[in-house]
Length: 219
Ligand SMILES: CC(C)(COP(=O)(O)OP(=O)(O)OC[C@H]1O[C@@H](n2cnc3c(N)ncnc32)[C@H](O)[C@@H]1OP(=O)(O)O)[C@@H](O)C(=O)NCCC(=O)NCCS
Image (cartoon, rainbow, N blue to C red; front, side, top):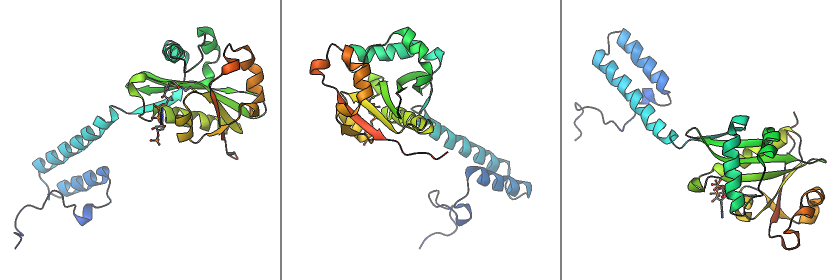
């Protein structure tokens, strides 16, 4: 038979605490302390428990990242990332001046205070835009940064009432995982007229066109 006089099991959550936030639990403890039902050492234990919970969660945040609009302070990092993937034949090279002039089109992924990914949204007329210069640091591939950057730019596109976003890529699997569908290059007349006619690889281009429709935001 269970010993009902022993300390309650730590893994069992009391009914009166279920559904409460940490703040609410702390408030409850404070009011019990004020009523004299809890003592100083109970309150100290409560404080350490909150600190421990915070520490556990901030451990996960070491790998936390976020996406934001790029600024001129990011230009060196942008150049580095774009150059790196251009040398590996995954992206087109871009001049520093070009990145600076188009800084408002770029988004960066920041992790531990460092830029670890980037891309830009190049807007054409007639409701079409292109994702360009997408790249994530080679040491943190496949951890969600690429998807997060693309989703950030898709939201930006929706706010600008852009109807379709396309990409010309050698990473087709990634783009199909993030909701793009394969299309024929001929459906992208503006792109073909603008960039491809000067490209040395235009006769045997191995980039695949992917496109995503952008639902209207109705704002
Ligand atoms: C393409 C690139 C940006 C993807 O970034 P990433 O952070 O590694 O990708 P994510 O972790 O966000 O992946 C999102 C999804 O795509 C999948 N994916 C990513 N790369 C993939 C690949 N090469 N093959 C198959 N699936 C892939 C992931 O498994 C994930 O799928 P899930 O969400 O269903 O689990 C990155 O690989 C990169 O920098 N490549 C070099 C530059 C480049 O090719 N840029 C594109 C030019 S248009």
